[in-house]
Length: 203
Image (cartoon, rainbow, N blue to C red; front, side):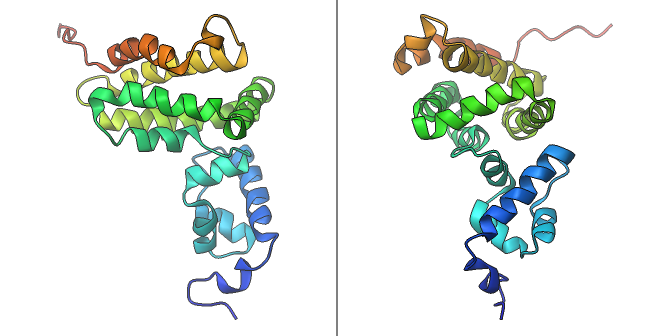
């Protein structure tokens, strides 16, 4: 008999988590990131939504697991952005480099980016997730005009670094030590996030 939390009957089944992931993966690829909710995945998988939350925590967690990511950059940046805005670029670089350098988390991320080049469904899904869960969330923490443009410029520089270092493996960036990467990249990232003091004149 299922307990009041909705977890009792299903929690002991070893295939429940895989069943949820199968549903989530298909729904993400077919409907896009925005259309998927934990409740809709739970309903199709035949489990209580509390069980989905128990296994994956959030929609970002479910997305990362569905695409076989052991760690999700969106969740990493969301945590990093909660600290001091003045040191956000350095912290973001440090945390993301650690994520990509770790073989356990880096290998699935490289596979995802490589796969997105060849699969338009994955490309669109990654794009939508990045816009909603990274660019929009960073923009919400920025002050002043053009916050979303500045957040987008920040993410574009991060994406360029990731592709250069981990996908194309271009030298000398590919073999630079993380602290050297942070020293070189943090200043332009700060510039990207900074609100311009020159606002366009109103005609």
